[in-house]
Length: 201
Image (cartoon, rainbow, N blue to C red; front, side):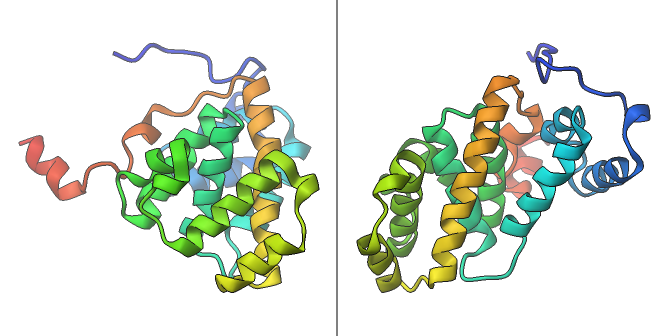
């Protein structure tokens, strides 16, 4: 049984307090997802930072490039686990499961990506992301060469690093404000819809 818990230690503005552009963004997400992820509600406490956060988020996560959307989300899950960010592991884990159509993958990535059902290329990508996460000062040309051998361009490598760095900020703020994942995220992508419907009959 789920108990009603606060989603942030900071005030969460009522919908009537949202600026028009933020209201439009939140309603768009609600229509698409069927619920409002708590990150939108909690960051609405700081409208200017909400706008800046999601502008950079979209620039990194929605762009075309050498990384698939699923691979971008894999980076978020693996590095957020290192940063002990419950919100991002749960929320982006759901997105990984959906993009990759792989119900087990997010849990594998959060614990140990080297044991996960991913390609050698993706393993190299996550090795590098975790190095950026833990010890970016030691990144050198050898890291670039290894990624190039797996077919990553230098622009792709920038993307891996930028996603890691951006979500490092997100992880830390989510932890500080005690941002709570929506309950909906936990089950998303775990059971195929057909099987779920059969089980409920």
